[in-house]
Length: 487
Ligand SMILES: [Zn+2]
Image (cartoon, rainbow, N blue to C red; front, top):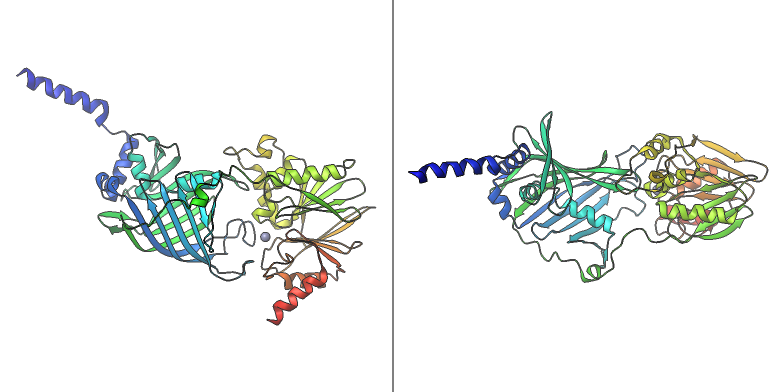
């Protein structure tokens, strides 16, 4: 009889100590049950997902707010080795707009194998991506109902902050390997509705990457979504409809290619190389890598055209400008357009006290950009906060003093962006522009429109000083347009 009294006591203690699930665990347990059960989820080895859909054009659309430009995605195939932390995405993208690389389909291969992220070019060459991109891909492994719930069930993960809002209940998950994500489930079906994680974006700062799930279907005893929508901040970057998917199907070899696996980790952008070439009196071409700038000397101050890419590039360009003309303050930067690679240094320029001159459709975007949190990867402006000083250009603005005249014009009707400015130097007969004519580029889809704009304003141009490529005679631009129109 003592034995009968003793046993229930032990059971009661056990139940009280750890078998009573917390509210956080209840959310995960409910999700696991709705998906097909904990045992089934923990037994999953691989996911093979095929489909089609669209990609967005983050940071490269017609205006900062626009999300109308899309790539049609075909032959989408994402394979995930759940236990090994490996995945590979293969897809073909066709631009559904006038893309600067032309209308040809682009095949993309992007993989993650442990800490090594890699891309494989169409010619088969694999390159290692930056640690930041690799980290995003490691986190992306959990942007699927099976992988996030499996990770949340792991006793080594931690769960926190259960809450219900409208039709969803959410819980924050810190995975065993230290990644933070939020899992949301539907209050009625208990199926996962979305997964959210945070990352750094050079332009937007701390951003949420969210993948939402819909159209659940039965696959091998599990419920799997057949519709994925992914956003970065408020911008849709991908929407995929699944045409075929399987559990534990053949993934092929998911090991990183040897050339990527043996490459040194890429911890940040390459060091900046800034060359300076005096194009005319008081005008310097600051080149050296992919994105150039132009320094302009006025009577009592200096103005830069373009703060591109990132802090590294833009701070180096600013330093070079100050070195070239140390006696005059650098006070302004002209921004050619809002595209992220051309505005990635705007925050750095603001941190250096520069006033931003931009097309008026960009003003609200830069106001927002300068106020955004960059706590995940603090940039120059996060370390040295300053308010935005901005001057906007509608169709035209003349920058003029006794030493220098620069006319800024909006490039109207371009298929590249609605926020483009070009800079014309009437005395030097120079034209500075970005992206609408890049000398020596194989395709020039926006060049004819550039010529129209030059003609409309009756500009007398001898040389084009491009933000991409080498300085070229204006005749080369006319030739590029001739070639294009004669085809
Ligand atoms: Zn652009």
